[in-house]
Image (tube, rainbow, N blue to C red; front, side, top):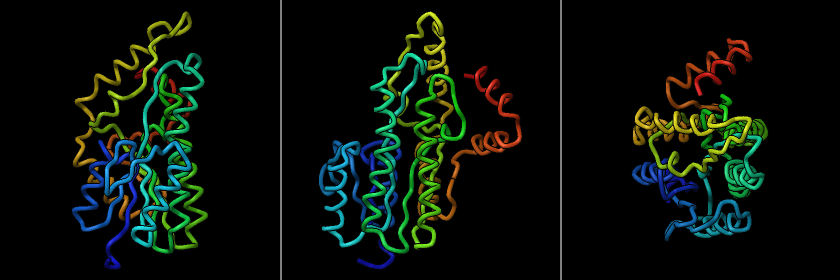
Length: 257
């Protein structure tokens, strides 16, 4: 194993962004171990929401290769619906999958990581902009960003780089797999359903998978900044987020979504 060859762990490796990241790292000659519930050897089958399963998987990677250089917490899922009416178990599941599982994968890998290593959280543009009827998804990704920024500060002096990559909408199976609650009750009526339809109807406008993931891959390799934003539109929105009054920004977003 050469010094330039890195041992990389990627979660959510069987589809979408994770699968494409695995391909790009392997094409560049790196050793990649994907973690996913349906993974097969040499990848490792593990439910990332199960801390003990994650620990065993990370221990196995280290036992195989004697080091861990990069960990990419990519696994996640979506949830939409009126926040007031969402089942509490679905809210907890959203936080467990998008935040707690991502953090635990990184924490376990850090136990084996030396100076020169890097940890990357695949977050979302929704971590930067709150959306109506997707508030819990936005909250879970905002939590990811805060954890990443905290780790960035804690590990910078130890030679370990930490970044959060906020990706905009990409053409994957994410939209189809999102858990949707359309019932709005007396207060919200059909607003949650219309909001979901509006977002789902923009599938053709989402970024193409391969070019978008190439940009994510470059960010993962650099990992020099605490936050990367993928997509010009989202970079522009982030700029306006910092100059517009918060109330105005939220009112505009509410009308759009």
